[in-house]
Amino acid sequence: MMSRLIPGASRLALVAGAALALSGCVSIGTKAPDSLIALTPEASLPAGEGASGTLARSVVVMEPSADARIAVLRVAVQVDPTNIAYLKDAQWVERPSRQFQHLVAETLRARAGTLVVEGDVDSWQQRLSGRLLAMGYDVPSHSVVVRFDAVKETPGGHMETRRFESVIPHVGDHVKAITPAINHAANDVARQIVAWLG
Image 1 (cartoon, rainbow, N blue to C red):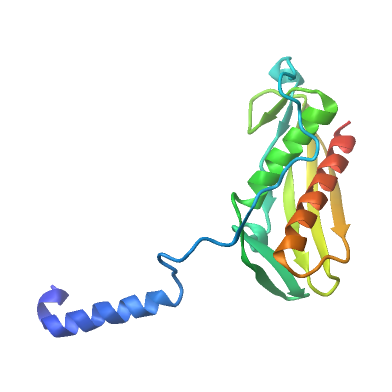
Image 2 (spheres, rainbow, N blue to C red):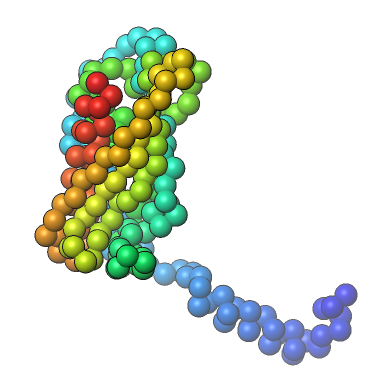
């Protein structure tokens, strides 16, 4: 009904105004970021090797939850204790929590030689879940920080928690220095988790 009450010229002005308002917060047709970042396992199961067993003897690696500041495709930069920015011209190829799940699972396959399942199943020997608290760059300390609160659960309801962290100091404040440092720190945390799972 409202469209009948607004003359054609006024309707055109309203549409143009709405488009201008959206252009400030939505990018349409912009170029891809200069760098797409993926976590790569430093320990990986060689081709032709694997593990076998039953689900009841498997380790399940769940996708962790993530703090809102890193639950995005941008790389978080901690400017000061209360302010967050994002690394210019770089973004994750997939959400960081999902990539971290894959990284931990692959490290576990390579180092423990056990049957590893990603995602929830009904039966397992151990289940790893948790919360990804940090995966980015800290400006005041010029460091890359990866921090993860892990939850290990075994059948019968026994649970154990532990916080894991890796800090890489003296990292330059540019993409070519930050992204490999994040990958190294994430792999370090993955190794710590695998050792803890035993």
